[in-house]
Length: 454
Image (tube, rainbow, N blue to C red):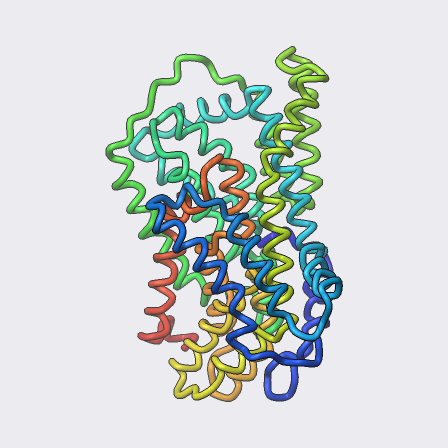
């Protein structure tokens, strides 16, 4: 995911203690019925999806409304406590430091994107891109750039912050759906999040399975590379009909500096919030020097950017609180026990690991947390059925990342939605890479490839 602070993985691993049979001990010492514990998530999906289907338009249903209903339901069904205690548990999840870190990233990203737009940085970057890339390679070029940047900086969120505003500008120039362009960047961002040596998911997967990063990378590459090449080919085909207007104005090179700075600092391993703060300051300096932005204008742009992230912040807190209640009531324990019963054969073992981390990701909305939560059980399954730990690490990372691309309350999709100004559902409908990655990953289990790791 790329926005988790140093030391968080070790702390989280200590927090989730596993019992001898592989299930996490209950946080409250009690266990309600497993399906009931999971039901808030089902209520959310039912409200969001059913309402969208009835309305005939996924763009009309605010995701925050569905989360509010599901969160209230989760509070009601939580047993054995008064309302104040239930709200305290909910607030613990909503105010979890990882949730708050996402919120700070949203705040700084909104301010950076808004101030960059105010000084003309987006227009300059769009003009340069149009000058370099022919129209028919525009989609594939944006996708490959997103893949390269994400694998370099190890963070899908950082890649989305840097490229989605540019992709949105390109969409207006080429007459393309901005949700489609945001999906191109988001798909490429997941490619790097899955493969990068400095990604949190890679670190978590290799640590829990006790294998080296380079071996996991090699096993993962056999799955991710074919998926990326297939998607790039699709974008080349779709780009045949793309029409891009000519760039008549010269590129204002100095206004490319904010985006170049963000990418360079991120590749250098600088904390994403520090990167965005530096970008905001550079936007101010450029705007003040060339007269495109005054002090009041800059403050206004910062405020507008932060305000534009308001819905994302509320959704993130509601999701964090609701998912904490699911964990508190034993929902994740239940699904772990359910999915590890009756495993037969190596294919069944790998599919069980894939299903386990996928569902954990749905319940936590965080691929790194999902890997850590299920990593110990996956290691036990690996040893019992003689699986290759390198393949298990690849399965954990791959399936957690692809599921992250389909949950409308994940940080990546929320960030892309906020920066592009389009509904999350619009991005998901154009998100090809996670779908293709899922198909290749399933085939790799069915047909036992790569052979060396199967």
